[in-house]
Length: 143
Image: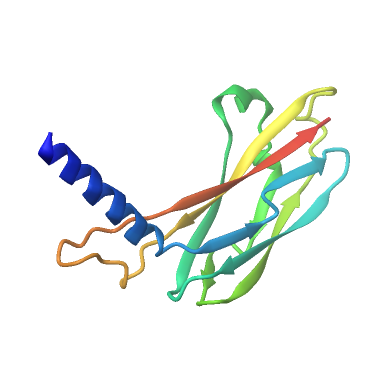
C-alpha cells in the first residue's frame, strides 16, 4: 500500500511538471461549417509557454462518422507550424465543397489535430523521456 501511495504521488507531480511544458491556446474550440459553400476559417494559436513549440496539423474522423468524413474536403495552411514563446499565429482552415461526395440531410464531423513534434530541449532528467502532446478541434457540418 505504501508503494502505491508513493507511485500515485510521483505520477501526480510528474504530470503537473510535464504538463507545464505545453502551453498552447487555440481559438475557436469548435468549428461549424456551411457545407453548401467553400469557406476559409481562421484558427488562432498562441504559445503561452517559454519554449518553442513545433506543430503538425492533420485531420482525423471519429469511427461513427467514417462514412461522413470531411477529411477529403479540408486543408490547413501552413502545413507545419513553429511558435516561439508568447507568439500568436493564424492558421487557415480551407473547406472545398465536393458535391459529388456530400449527401443531403447528413451530419458530417472530423477533427483537426495539432500534434506537437519533438524539440531537443524537451528531455526530462537523464532518462530522455519525451512527452508529445496532441490537441484537437471538432469540425462539424450538415448538408
